[in-house]
Length: 428
Picture 1 (spheres, rainbow, N blue to C red):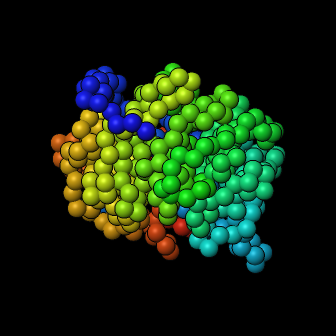
Picture 2: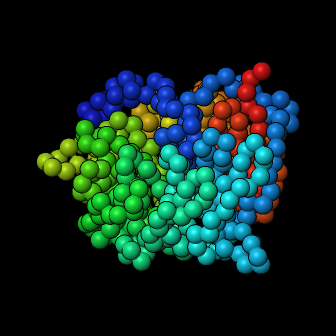
């Protein structure tokens, strides 16, 4: 790891200004964790610019989703999630599908044992298949229409995988072309690519020692894609920090240990051209990295480092709009922050309007902050000031509301434990 020069900072400023004008215009189908490209940003427009008193209208709510923090994904009229359900007097972990026209569950498929507070993964939809990871490391491929199991693997038994700490497997699998990518997390198989149709192994990434911070094993993050240095690569945060892996071959490209902590590394990286923004909590911090070609590998140059007094995201993720990162700061907190990537300094940082951490997504010029005590706020996505444009209080259930919001066809989906509620955000 190197520290970038002043010349590099000037170059970064030019790149930021040239490439960070607007959010990527990806397709708006919400088929995976944190939306179309896994970055928490929807390209949808025509949404309410502010919410009426009491929030936008609730269209419906569903109960019976079981215990868990899984969000939702979609295929046509089907909505998918996961949870620990009591069926026949025995609680186990299931992937489930709901028919949105009938507002009822149409199938559930058991994938493994229950966990003390439920599932974490959000199912990934690809064509007529659904992919998910259970808390006991069971990786499954299911028929989206029927729930029939097509193939399965176990990240511990089949790849020697291990979690860095005790909250169990949380990753949502990445589908890229004809492959499924996931993170067993150990040196012999830090990341693996499987044939998405059969589950057969395509490659395993062997990871060298990248530093002493953190712990061996997978983290709680989900993989994102980068094309830095004109090399397609998968970027992930695991127990020892951030890594990049060549997509075609599984070759280890680079590692960055400073962002690791030994408790839980959770937030997915944010990719901006040849740069990656990474952050974890537990008194750790955040960094912007410039990925630079170095022979047949890549070096991660540190553009800036912020300690926990400036910005650390616990869980809830961050979004990047223009040259700014928006998200909640602090361990078990969602202190709203707008961080300028050109300087590493906050454009604003204000007291949180609600308690607990905050999951954040963005669409049509606004942010949605969903706090784990259940309150939801619409916030203008601007570096000028923190401006609340609306608030709603969705139905509550037990435990923290950690499931990330989902947005599809102008409708906002919120889960809190056993309950999923749906709100109409479309401007009339």
